[in-house]
Length: 371
Image (cartoon, one colour):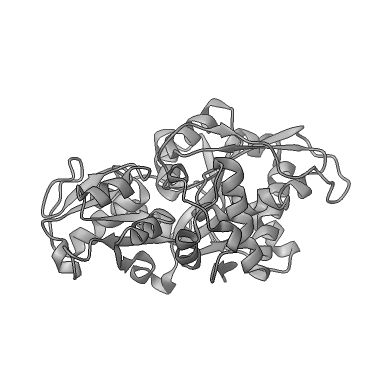
C-alpha cells in the first residue's frame, strides 16, 4: 500500500498578498454554520453517462487542510466527473454543524476531520456515515510565545489553546501531555498544563493579548500565530510513523451511498484527479486554493500566512485508517469517549475501484471496513 499524496510547498503568488480574513481560520470541526456556495465552473460530462441523482451536496471547510475540496471545486475537477448532476458546495466552519447537516439530509458528502467522524459514527451506532476516502495529512503545529516557552518542558504550568474539547488537535495534545507524565483533567482542561479550548477565529487575538501562551492548532491558524510573533515548537507530523496522520477525510451519508453509488464514485474520481493535479501543479494549486478561499470569504490569505502553512499539508487519497484508530484510542485514554466500536466506519470499495482504474495502488481500511 502506498499513499497518493503531495507535499504542498514553496511560495504563494503575489496576488495572495492581502490581509488574512480571520474568519477563514476554522479548525477541523469548529465555528459558524454552513454557507451555501455556487459551483465555480459549469458541469461538463466526463463520459456522457447520466447519473442517478440530479444533484449532490458537498460540504467542506474554508481551511487549507481541505485543499482537495478547495482546489477540486475551484478548478471544476470534481464537477467535471458528474456530468449533468449538479454539485452544490456548502462551506462549513464547524464539524458539528456539518454532521448535523449530514444527519438531517441536507448534505450528502463532506470533507471533515477524524474526531467528528468518529464521534458521529459512534453516537449513531454506525448508522449515519461512512468514511470513503482520505483527503489530507499533517498541517498541525504547536506554536508558543518564545519569551515564555523555550523548550517543551517549559509548557508545564502554561496556558495552551486547542480548538475545542475532544476535537482532533485537543485529543492529540492531551495524549502528548500524558506521555510527558503530566496530568490534566480532560473535561475541565485543568492540570499540569492548562488546556484552554478556544475557537480558532479568536485564538490569534488571545495569543496577542497574552491570555494564552501558545496553541496546538491546524493551519493556517498556526502560521497566523507565527506571523504575530509565535514560534513553532513542535510539528505533530514528527510524532507519527512515516510522518503521516489523517487530518481530513471524506465522509458520505450511508443512505446516499446506498441510493447513488455512481454519484459517489464520480465525486471520488474527481478527488483523486484533484490530488493528482495538485501534485503536478503545486504552485497553481496553491493559488487555486487561495482563490477559492477568497471567493468564499471575500479575501485571500496573506502571503506571510499561506507561504509557511502550505508546505506542512499533504493531500492524500489514502485515509490513513490506522492513524484514525490510534486517535480514537487516545480519546478513550483521555476518558473523552468510551471504547468505540468502529467496525464498518470505512467503505473504500468505490475509492479502490477508482484507484485501480487510474493505475494507482489500493488503500487499506485497517480492518475497520464495512462487512
